[in-house]
Amino acid sequence: MEVVHVELGARRYPIYVGAGCLQELGTRLGETGCGVRMAVVTNSTVAEHYLEPTLASLRRAGFDPATVQIPDGEEHKNLAWLTRIYDQLLEAGIERSGAVVALGGGVVGDLAGFAAATYLRGISCVQVPTTLLAQVDSSVGGKTGVNHVLGKNLIGAFAQPRFVLADVDTLRTLPTRELTAGLAEVIKYGVILDEALFALLEQRIADLQRLDRDLLVEVVRRCCAIKASVVSADETESGLRAVLNFGHTVAHGLESLTGYTRYLHGEAVAIGMVAAARVSQRLGFCAEAEVERIRSVLVRCGLPTEVPAELRGESLARAMRSDKKARDGAIKFVCLETIGTTRFERLSCEDIVKYL
Ligand SMILES: NC(=O)c1ccc[n+]([C@@H]2O[C@H](COP(=O)([O-])OP(=O)(O)OC[C@H]3O[C@@H](n4cnc5c(N)ncnc54)[C@H](O)[C@@H]3O)[C@@H](O)[C@H]2O)c1
Ligand SMILES: [Zn+2]
Image 1 (tube, helix red, strand yellow):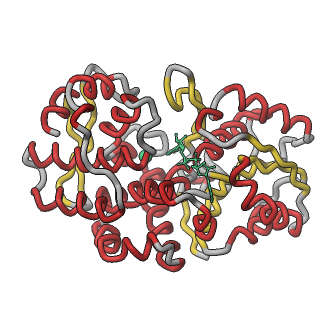
Image 2 (cartoon, rainbow, N blue to C red):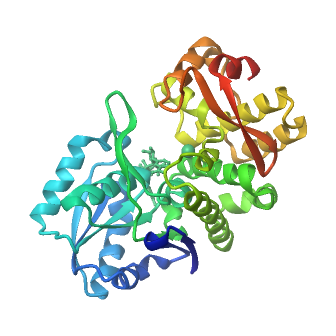
């Protein structure tokens, strides 16, 4: 099992990455010194595959786990389901010393993480991510929260977990489309900060899609290390952390314009990354060859790379402008220089769509 640390002083925590490491969850939780009575929060789909081994590992280590199950789907990441989680934690007798284990993808992670951050003014949380997106992105960094009818992730808190345990074997049951969407975020890390990772992906993307275990552990570990270093440098996204938004301005615009139904997040990010590279190239920051390298590896994954004609223009600009990251009509846009290096540029949404 590999270990990466998120360096945050007294709140420093480890990310364990391995193949088959779910069985070690109980032992790892035991090391945190948290109370015996604790809860696993998961959803119906993930429970079917991984609830039993999770509970078994916790019981072997002497824990007395309660289970809180929510239905599958982003539409349940809201205040109503948060309240139901509080109810069940109270009914189960979870105290201040207890912990919440978030077992699932980013939806469960965000919701359970926020529940843990606020229940009894905050109890320990452990993230056990089971989607590729959650393993390389949402479980690391401490952003938790729920959606509001007026927008995604509008209610929440920064609250770091005690540790993250990513078992890449859980990805074997993940639908192919979800796995592929997660690959877009993996590729993003290479593009923004790690040329060597990007080159490895160019070489071995097919092995990754075949879920080669050693390669998965290596790639997830490297992505977590990148996210960990960015988060350590800028926990609350005042500056550097915004580099993680590469490709996300256009992605959020597309997701919002299509009512969050047409694209999985990673698919929109794939289109958004090529768009961001294209904009950068048109502004003279990067060479055409870099745009082509990014496009080509995404195409080989089976990800979309073009903004459909019907979604171009003013409506996309408007959708991007209403994103919460837009200020005074201008956006702190992450531009590409070369693979592995970026720069921030304030651009208007009109300019971005003009250069697409
Ligand atoms: N906190 C952050 O920093 C952060 C970052 C990025 C995204 N997010 C959030 O993450 C969420 C998206 O996360 P996601 O892409 O993991 O989606 P998700 O949690 O909805 O999971 C995708 C689907 O896969 C299923 N699933 C999960 N693990 C499985 C497994 N091992 N086998 C079979 N099926 C499995 C889920 O039940 C779901 O149907 C969004 O709500 C987004 O806002 C948060
Ligand atoms: Zn993303």
